[in-house]
Length: 241
Image (tube, rainbow, N blue to C red; front, side, top):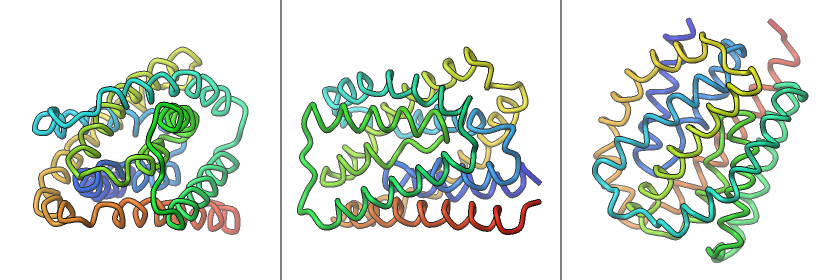
């Protein structure tokens, strides 16, 4: 069941991420958490580390290296906090926190003409991404919202490099704090197959969104994922397995 339903979620998430630069964690992490909390967030971090390599293979020239540097600088201390959160805070509480945070960010961003992209905002986004990414496997929205007004190829390439480094960092930290069981690694490895298929399907959609529709797509994916995460947690609370 985990590989079947979770694989479908990863397939859809890979289509989204291949198109707008992020989304596999947003789509798949809530589903995998609901199916088997014991493999999370390690399983999705395996996918998070692998998928960016496919984007970088074709669009690595568009990476904003300065932005990646600032974001990675902020992410390391955020990852440490995320590791503390995953040890001491329940899955329910941290999922609700992430969902509310994403919705607030989307509302504030949608009301503004643009989010300034500078060393401070990118480092701050990396810090928040470190907390949420390590604790839940969902670290894309903070960085994506900062880069929402960039061109499609730059968003995808920059986020891909950041996600690759971030996922590798999170896996090491999870292993250090004893939250990376072998089942998480094996499940994550098995999910690479539907991930590759989803990325392959994303090509036509990627070309469509590059025609000036990336910002709307980024905000829609971020908001939709937050609503889904809230709904999933409410349902789980009302009708526990």
